[in-house]
Image: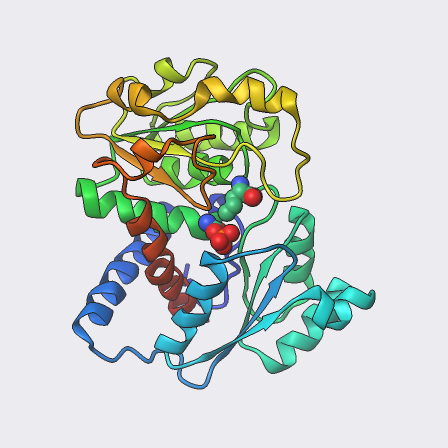
Length: 307
Ligand code: CP
Ligand code: NVA
């Protein structure tokens, strides 16, 4: 199926060849940008960006991405729009669709971005919900390909709190043929709904998918170690959760327990000294800033293909 006109909300809605097409386009657009070759594929197009939560990378990479594609992006916050005064998501979606060619939204409840898409007549992109962060994982897979040359057959170990990022890793990386291990303490493992779907994907794509409660077991033979904050936006900070997650910190000892040439990833923002140490984040295995850069290229590819 063509990607044109499609929403980009949940990676499990895509086939491998479709994600492959996005990744190939992302690598191509990155090459063009580095060489200074024009690629104004969205001349005259506008993207509405709704941010219910804070953002540095998503906001800047989407806005700059639209500019580089010859289009324009609008930054909308609830406090500055009628959304903050109670205009419904449905009405907002219908109105924005009359002006803009796509809508990107960062929301709290995943149902909010789904509702937006139900009412919009232009493609809707999930810029992070409490359940999923699909754009992040496209940039991550692009980064893994740059450093490892492929995806299929590699082992990615996500260590820490099971959250929107690990959920999208379970989907996207599995679809692309990677073996995924989630290492999380009991009580902070993936939600059953997402795990079930990811398990179906792993059967379909013949990959390994496992959830373990020991960080060292998780990273054994890993090609990629990935972590994220213990407390996602909107979550309450508790001592209990912090104590459960501290043994899952990505530190040098944990990195040493993986493959020699393991790469370390983090979607950022990092809480240095908490889920990851300075030594690892700034060390030779870390690719976190390549990963951040690739948000730009991966999202340009998504925009160019769906708009
Ligand atoms: N990784 C990520 O989505 O970063 P921001 O919260 O800064 O957008
Ligand atoms: N899991 C984090 C990701 C931030 C980019 C959060 O939702 O806050």
